[in-house]
Every structure is written in structure tokens, then in C-alpha cells.
Length: 128
Image (tube, rainbow, N blue to C red; front, side, top):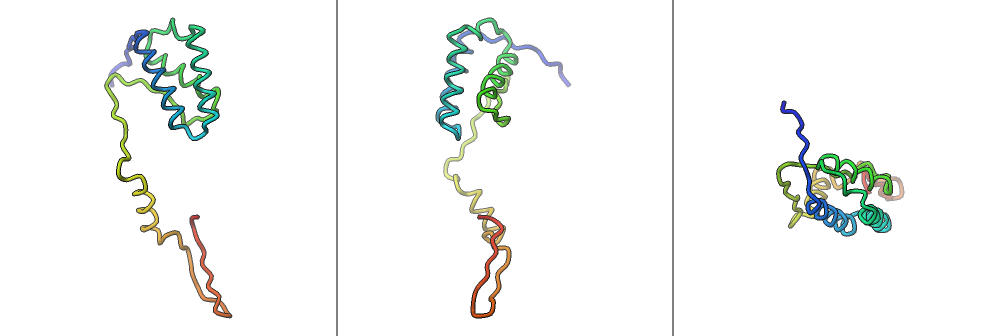
């Protein structure tokens, strides 16, 4: 196991990270009003110079995570540092493939079915 080495981050890199983070939050976060709140909070921190003294990329990612979680209370949100480029996941062409696969492999959610007295059909769904 290799020791963790603090990677320096320049102001230009921080500006690019912040621009991309704000854009992703506004375009992709499920709660639009929270996305705007998080973006406003990050912009406020930029204007106040709260990120100026940070020199470690790992620390910068940690602070950004704290900042966005303080608004969203969403523990799924996290900013991580990687010393090598990370490829974005592409869902192109298979936006619903996972759902179709799930339904086909689970009987389309039908748990049980039977015909009751009076020719009434009972169908129990496991998913909706």
C-alpha cells in the first residue's frame, strides 16, 4: 500500500472544479431548489475567499463535500480527488435498459395471480 501524498491544487484548477461542480449540481441534482442553494453557497464561499488558502486537492475535495452536504443533508453527495482523470459514466442508449432487465428477470413485478369466485382476477405486484 502506498502512502497518501498531498497533491497541490492551483487557483485555476479550483476555479475549474467549482465551475464544473456548480454546473453538475444545477443540471443533475434531483432537487432543483437545493441545487440552487448549494450553488449559491459555493459562490458565496468563492466571493468570500474561503477557498483561497487551500493548497491540497484532497482537502479541497473534503471541504467542498462538507459545503454541499451542509445545505443538502445528502450523504450521497461527495467530491473526491483523483490524481488521474476519471471518465464520466455514459448512459447513452441504455437509459431504460436496467429497468427492462429488472422487470424481465422478475416476472414484471407480478408476485402472484389467481382467479377468485365470481371470475375476479387477483394480481399481486411486488414492485410498482
